[in-house]
Length: 127
Figure (cartoon, rainbow, N blue to C red):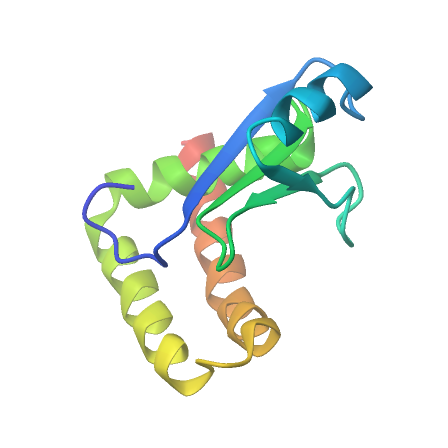
């Protein structure tokens, strides 16, 4: 999202009509130097990454899935609510320092604020 601090990784969400991805699609991404990790702990999300250290990641999900809908809602909410985006960015910056070498703790420590913002986003979307 423009203006929001983020890790130096290009993060791509691709929606498919049906998951899992076909072998042909997996092969096509592998020819572009992406490694396929399957669902990697998140059912319905198929994960690819590229680079060492990682420079790109792709999340393939079904277009009408909860994963797809939630991520787009969160994106749209942050784009239209600068105070929420600033709050999220401040937390990400703090956690990036605190958990510089512990990606799992960084991610899990963001979860409470993300859930709180999603409650607000759902209310905003319903209005």
